[in-house]
Image (cartoon, rainbow, N blue to C red):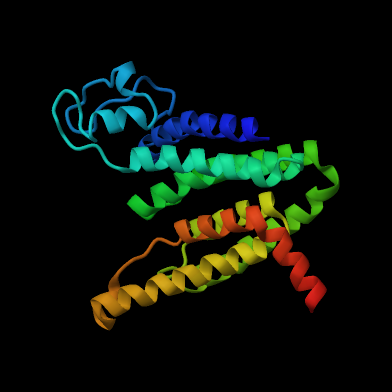
Length: 251
């Protein structure tokens, strides 16, 4: 299994590099396959030797080789984060094909969605829609018996956040509701703990913002909820079924 974990982590680095392309281009409605990456400051095409995941950013000390402009730390963080999550997912679900495959796909979508929402407070339909379609297609193909549960979980999660979004659009956004629905399509019943973890984490961070900035300024600070949902989804993907089983057995 150790070899599989290492292979997954290396694959995660490569996938993470592509996810950075998604983060940069999807909000601009540009094709992620539309040519090589360029420096966001000077527009110079990134050389192949400067496009090695994680390593190139470290060797260049986070600066463009051509103009010397700083390159966001988001790039190595996305690559390293994808590598870690791929490796952990394989380690936890090595013996369960359904959880392994759906978990890896879910992580692949969660990372760019969370990064885009963190930067732009936007959850693009161009990511949530294909994520939902792939969830249904792959889930039905590898685990047809569990697909009904995942469809119900997706609908319930989307409704759970969708109603507050409709009632108060300035609070929860419909993008968050769509993301919750996608999470349900991959997680099934563990989407419940995922939502609770996301909400609890968001509340804690919100309290911290209010405490540091004061009530008036804190209430005006917009905090994207997508990253909290993504965090809850990752936790639930790894240990959520155990949490559900514990709750059912206890209550």
